[in-house]
Length: 194
Length: 194
DNA sequence: TTTTGTTGATTGACGAGTCAATAAACTTCG
DNA sequence: CGAAGTTTATTGACTCGTCAATCAACAAAA
Image (cartoon, rainbow over all chains, first blue to last red; front, side, top):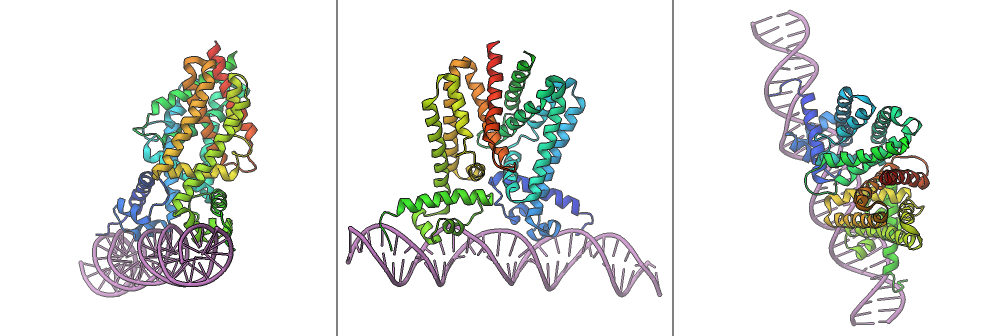
């Protein structure tokens, strides 16, 4: 029953299964067989399409980053005014799609992966760079020269909130996270206005 | 040459070696042999004293948390005034002893461990609880009812700064991290005063 | 001789990656 | 059109390495 053009479908299924499994197990110690099984195929096929487990991990990482990036871009598109743009970034960061147990767990593990796999480190650096430049450009009209510093602290807080989410029990509360980050922002801006 | 009373010495050496190795490799995929070798003994001896690799990890985790706790307590002891207490916590968090490559790397990996090992999760929860209550009690006189919220955002920022440190290159800059966190604090407090 | 320290060798399991084989779909060209 | 050949899909079985954990044995102190 070999239908043609399976490659993208299989790859997509594997990428998604990788994220789910990493999130479920809570570490990168997932076997290719586990992932393949969840994606509905044999481990040999997974190797056939990705060549190695590491490539699968990297593809999964690119996937979550792509989704995140798309969401941010979408939110920025309809945001109005500088403060609206910052809010948009925050809301996208903690949206229901990104701020999910398995996805957050995957993020954490990608961070670990970045310690030993240069390509993973590079990808994470790209994410950080984009986040930072988005924040800075939105903050510039609001905070002038202080935009960089505020972007750094906001960025650290976003990452910290992600990190803490993995320890929490119960469903993720994106709204609360946004509220916390927003409060920080308002405080910084208020001080700047003084 | 079996000298008596080796147990605590060996255990201590293993715990320290565990931290170094996890930091060096950047993941929990360190073999007991690697750790034992760095600690100057055979892997069999490591098993003899700890029983399992997991126990070794947990002991290492307790160790970094104990050191951190001691440093915070020490700093709090000599701190003056509420704001001094907050500053003390921050300075201890990013001190040269705690804010080290290998230690930060170990923290990150303990966070991952907490995903799958309940005892690790419990330990991390203890750490978070202590940090939070220290911050809240220091902030109470400064911020009243807003103490909790500020403690949460400060805590998230501290964790975020740790997280980001693992991606940086070059030696850790604890002072810069403290400065960032302090700026956030001042902003929050300034707003409260308005 | 019992307890404590110590290790080389071994076991047993597990898992990434490879291979050979099978089959369906597509292409070519007489 | 249709046979021969090619590419794509797919997997069960296998190899090969690694590693946590155990064991048997030895040494020295008590």
